[in-house]
Length: 166
Image (cartoon, rainbow, N blue to C red; front, side, top):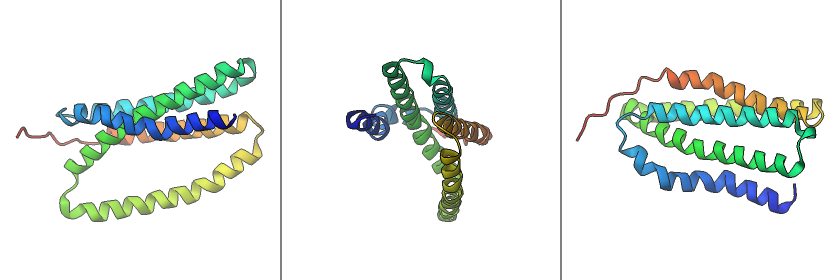
């Protein structure tokens, strides 16, 4: 894509979550249970990533303008659903982890995330270099979707504490 398309995609990926938080955070805040919104957000993200993989698999048979439009729409869904997932996840964490355990939890989570990034970088490089376009991106989006699908069950297993009315 050209500079305008890359700029638009960047705006979607960066701006949509911010606007989504402004629009939906107050609604999500008043909901007594957040796990359903978390699962909705994660599920939509899985579907968006898997859809991009499937679309790229048949990319040669799709008109380029339609292909780009579909990718933009799916990335918009991905970014917007991240709002539901992110706000809900943060709220559930705040209610689930005792204050004295939060520091340890967030340090452990940061270490785990850093190690995961270090492992994923060479795998991504190998996938992108080993397969030709569009199969390399089909694999990347497919792997992302599959791993997020596995994580979905971890989010589903969260035992959300019931918020007591104030």
